[in-house]
Image 1 (cartoon, rainbow, N blue to C red):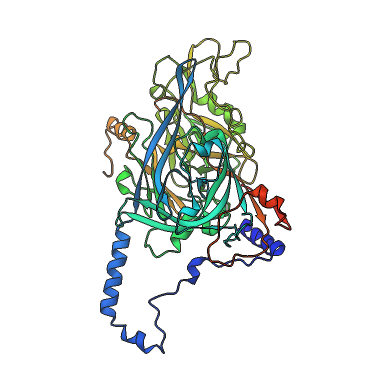
Image 2 (cartoon, one colour):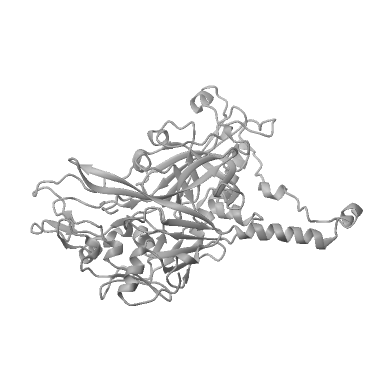
Length: 543
């Protein structure tokens, strides 16, 4: 991971700090017996010890996968006293530290870090949510980016993470992150380094109900492997599979509490068809991205992927279906259609969209990609910028702007002066440069509410199977097929796909004498005291 190597080299060169070995390396194997240790030989009656160990191991394995319910949260947007849109997210519960500090987080495949607001954060977004207090946890300690303890009275290293929409600046702590229920049989805890947000942009964080983000990308997107939940899980003895599965029930009424994420395996009960697997493309970039061979709308193959350069990032933290910005008009023209006020656009006659992968094809119909309600033709919808390298600073002013006059309003390509309402797809432009772009798709909620997806961290592959949702079950029944096993309004664009990462490394004059470091002091006060001879420049990685 080039970013981690460069960080450690810079820290060593400027500050003379040693790179610490992972804490797990310091734990000795209790089962190892030295050949010269007679006492240990007396403890070897292996039948008893191994049986007990096997029982413990079996009990540990039996709790996996941990199933975390996800709640679909919907926040209405109003114009002139009328609800015109909803912002939505899927969030589940975790806890951090001892005693447990509870949070609701978005489980995000497009970013790498566990991020929660710090108790020291004074941003509006932080004040609206639960915050993490590192000093209140007996299992926590403040760290710098290289894993070293923060010296008493010294500044912490910082990271700035730019997402597709929104930005977070944070400091680091190492603590225990727990998933699952309240009892030991249904809960699993993993020691991992987390980001304590000291600044969070207003959009999109303030308006959502969740507190933070639980990044689940491959570990090369993280500032270091100790920040990757699955890297830490892989190094543990918990016996979990290095997989997770995501089930999003979609916007159908009554399904708000039906979604879930399975961690440490997947839930086969959420499948209506067998999983089909495809390898992760360009694994070293850290995204759960796949090669896309062709894109078809109706019976037409689009030109966008003819040069073989198309890839798609499967992102649970993105509300829309992202398409390359250069092709947005082609998609809008092909998918959008005239509508009727009060009509459910998900059931209109519109073409299917197919993504051709290696060995199989993913298919989306209007029930998956269309905004539920028709919008007035004189109302601007969508975002002209979408996801860019700079969109992390401030989210676009996105949909449902007040109707403009007919002489000044912007119309999408399908819109004319004649129809009063239009059915518009939930798509957004993606304008990212090489090496990630330019022909990049972001496969967000429209695709993930149709397919159950399984992410195999060890084998670097993604499995797709028809999800056991109400919509899919009804569609199969209508077609006379048998399953293989057991917003109501338009949504606002948001994307937590990590697009930019900047680390500020700060030199420390001395390490603390104690084994436990204090949290970072006031930054301005410490700087004024002249306690830092040098502050290293930010280390920036453009994703």
